[in-house]
Image (cartoon, rainbow, N blue to C red; front, side):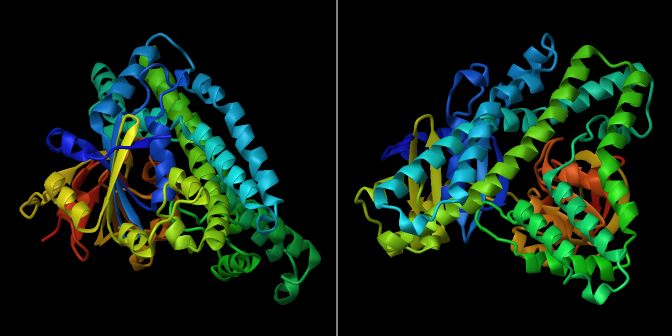
Length: 508
């Protein structure tokens, strides 16, 4: 575990201000985000010597987190991949295999935990379960620095390699489409797996003659119950544990049936998308004859898209089961779940060992907190002390005169619409059909807004990011990695998005 070090930030402030940082934004709390951050900093042999990150800082404000990754760390990890991609085939698959035993241990532990009555065990047993669970989870996600280091640091390099190839082949037009096709995902995301499962139930219901009584039929009830057991966790994030009930899924089924959607066509469209992407990519590779180096980079990107999705699945399941544990620990020691979420895992263990925290201290953390990690040490600030550090490190630049900006094409197409800045899942409902969804980055729980958007624009994200994957699955124009989209644009702006050429322009 990392160690608290008083005075760490004062030693580092001047150096940190001059650094370049990659910003990610989530709905998140300290306890759950901490696990990812600690995993990324942890050094181990599986990370290919130097594949761990060295520093992070996070700003927590009203259940939202802005997480800043040292770009030098990303570049170093990407460089490791670039050197190995020139001489090692199937590198991504080999790395995924390194963590396969940990993943099995994680799901085995979940199975045992799901059958445990937490209220009936001793404090010592509860402490052991929490410690073992967090340790097992941590080992499954130490790969995060590799996933983020490659996914977030390689997009421009891959684009450069693709452009070199297109130059050699004297191809000038539709370069965004070539990039989108060559980097498209070839695996089904867990969100789409859940949607296919629900659509199949809707399809069965639609074949029944008496729709009014269909939901009361034992066969349909069993299908809904099975779906609920498999996918109750899919709306979770790094802060909230949403246990979707059978009633939630019944309401979704009713909405599907009411929409007059061609269910069979929709299932086919979603199910065949990865296969279509793979065939289009294979056809283009055969036509363009890229170098083995570029082919290796594209394969690593495919594998890491899958690996990243699997990591999200585990983090959302961790949110569920850790919430159950934190709630029970809090009940016994006089804290509510909201307060428990603002303790790091070492503090939770200390709490069960006799340490205490004041309600005001935890309330301050949930409102505004700054945490810095470097190597094996960290320091936490809240309230005014946190704000002073934030103001020092992140003085806002003036973007008022910028009328257009560029990014990377994740999915081609053009759109014009009204901007809706989404800072949290709680703001997704403000996106109306035809709007342009603009965010620092998107998350799986943004899906309701993404489906209504005419286009997606993000500040951050690489070719394996959520926005890139979902936009291709939905066929929505998408530009990622603009760096300044949420700073230049504001709610109500009218903009044009040309994802074919990677630019966004305000319309006067």
